[in-house]
Image (cartoon, rainbow, N blue to C red; front, side, top):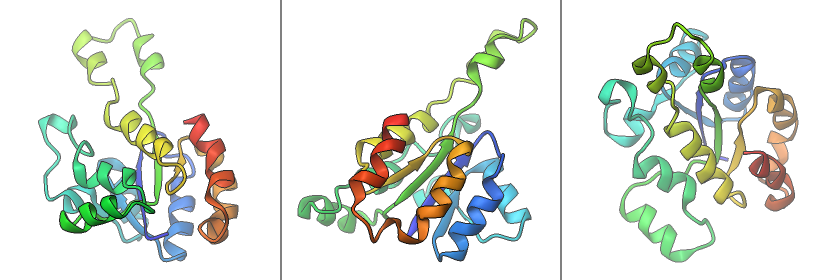
Length: 175
C-alpha cells in the first residue's frame, strides 16, 4: 500500500487511524480540514491540490473531482492498458480511501437553515470517491465509517499481502 486519501467530515478516531497509516509508511493525502487536523497533530500530509496540480475551487465545491484522484482509485492494477495510461498521465495510485460524508439529513432537519446553506451540505466528492473505491475493491480498500477504523487498523499490516477480494468486499458493499 503506497497512498491513502483521507477526507472526513466526522473526525472521530481519524488521528489514531492516520498515525497507524503513517507508521506503516503509507503516504497521507488529504483535503481541507482533515489535512489541517493531521498537520497540527504532527503528521506529514500531502494536500490533494498538490496531487492534482489544481487548487480547491468554487468555494470548496471542487476538491477531489479530478482524474488524478479518480484515475488513481479506479485504474485496474492488473490491466496493462490502465497501467500504461496512469503512467502516461502521471496519475499516482491511491490504495485506500477513507471518507465519510456530510450529515445532510441532520442538517436538513434544522428548520432555521437557509436553502443556500443546505445546498452546500450536499456532498458530491465524498460519495464519488466511495463509489470509485467500491468499484475497484479488488485493488482499493475503502473505509467510510469511523466505527470501522479499529477493524481496518488490525488488518492493515497484512492487507496487501492477502487475497484482496475477501478483505475488501465487505467494506465495499457497505460503501
